[in-house]
Image (cartoon, rainbow, N blue to C red; front, side, top):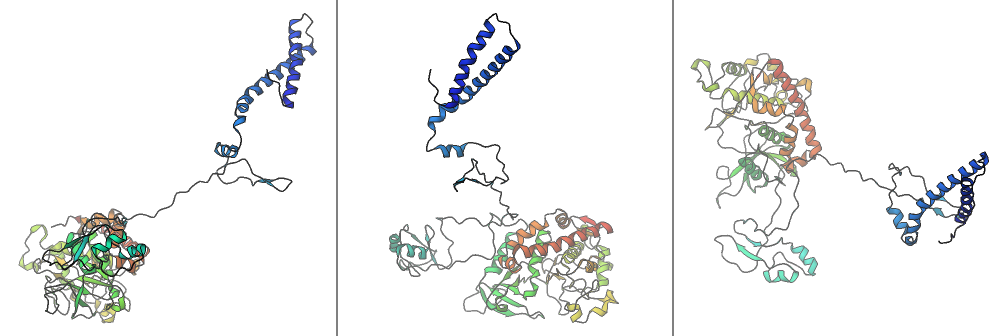
Length: 519
């Protein structure tokens, strides 16, 4: 039995040595058990029980006592403290009399908050560029290298050498690069080890996912890339009041004058007509497919470098008259009669006395819906009779506003067909107006229309119009940046969504039918 070495333990053992014999004597002797003896014995028993519990609790702590040493503070930091509040309301450390600060025996816990991320547009996240070992696309008349990505400036910095605009295969091994394999396009003659690095730049049509949005066809993507990135071979004037010009894209026959026909062309418009790009994407999302591909483009010889809309030039369009720019001459009164006859609907051949044209009845429904969402008035309401125009509107500048008394004689404009497909319309001059208030919308555009396309109405009802417009407009890098990025695009979409709600309320109030129009 070991001797206790602390004052508290000496007192406990002293009291035990006095209490134990006395309690044994009280309970074993025949002396009468007085009240004083009972109280004294009870007190000794309680004290013995308390002493036994203290010894049982202190034994494991005494066993771990020798382990404490230099690592005591580290173990204390590892011990859990379930009673510590997690709201940062811990008291400051206390100071002692000698000026030193007494650190509290607590553990500070920092909660890491989640980072809020903006809504991601599907297919618009640019992937990380990895080191690829594939062969680059061959340009006509150029030689390329097969191997890892080649950065001559970085290699020059690492080796402290000056790299010219060309390099040789033997020199690449000196700067730590793998040997390159020289590839030549078919039909080219070898010209020695030297080669010219091809100039590559990123396309203005951004597609970072595996495929483009489903509402854009392969022909649309090809036309957009051509209009945005094609080399301009020449300019060709156009007989137009707006001062539009034709951009001759891609090279034609060597030695000949660049012109539209042998080469692809794009109609270059003014910067104020930038809504043509928005109209093209809205047309494809609604499933109408009646507009020509349009992109935004910047160039040093175009409006001092400001972005301008470029629309694909289509030589298959029917010739138009100089007055109304239409392939079919129609007035407002004649147009309303055609809507009542429902020409060519359900495969029915119209009678000669109906006065029908070759245009299918469903085409007018698609045009009316499209023009209402963008508030395009230069086709069906050329005199601005259905709303309050501004001074800068074409009808006011041309003095057509007072001619609303006899609306039946007002001619329609920009009614265009294709030569090989006269039943379908082509929507041109799609300059929209996003600043027109809700109490000044042109409802005359919807007059006489009793049916609307199911594909377009379903998109307006599905609550996915905003997401699709963001995905589609993001492809056009120049247009996206010219409108102020996503914040500016969202403001334009807000206007279209509000007009879509008004349109759905209108067709419900007037009992208009929603029919499939995919003939």
